[in-house]
Image (tube, rainbow, N blue to C red; front, side, top):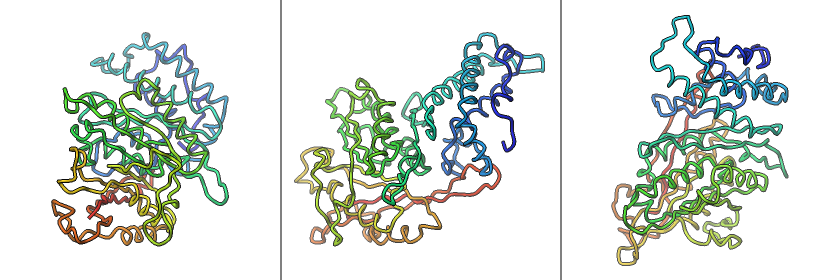
Length: 417
């Protein structure tokens, strides 16, 4: 895209849209998509097809500055708005061109083009402020009839008291974790039976909220299918972060995806959480009491790219130790939910600049020597501790069309043992 014409010079006149083949119009919409709805890097798993849509909009590093300039140009944005609106309004006038365009399935192709343009137009409309980018993220699940779609707005990263608001942006780890959860919910303790029992789910360092929102939308769509005819307990999803600006944006993103009516099937909220409150520097810390919703333990905790300082490792460990539900012996269980295994799922990119942090995670959460034991309380005389139960490596393309750089991630499944 380097050196390419801006939208005002590249887009054909609205009155002549019908003269262009669908393939050319689709390419133009993709061009606008790369400008106004840029992809999140490092999310396309190699040899994995579920997120092929994300790979469609790969760009080069040297295009970033050019795209940023176009994205912040009010004139170009307004011109793109008008053109997309004109394309949608003139859909009825689109006909097969004379250049041999295949007529088979033409109406379906037009519908796909218009849906793509309409989604992009909605995203552009939410990104009017300078430095803000609004994206739409679709996720497929084999258990849903249609994709889950999450709309998120990123805000500019700022530095406050030497701490950057990194949660202002959506990162590849969040997309990857959300995609993995929706592809195989049962693996993450979210089978239909689990959903019907009303699990409590916590996200640490939620940032823009992609994981929590994708999960909440899945739960809302799936709860009616869980344990038909029985009484459901509404699931609880709490997205947490620390910085006030990040929390404000997180709450806006929740409102953009869930109104009060659509939130009736579950409890979804965003709360402030300071991990250091749970750590006293000597292991298990105290429980914070400022948010009552955090005083009850959780069945599942998720964290995507939340450790980027060495001190975060101990803070996260102690926070999870305080908030993750401990398993009970059979005679202590009062319901089926308490028989499920509580888990902390941590997804980390393996950055060369953060090798000590990666090593510290494996030291803070040692491997469970008894992995594979069906009862984590088999040896009751040994105090429970948080251990790595599973470790999975993942490799993704970074989205750069030229360099083909690979991004490596590690997924830890952590639980009591």
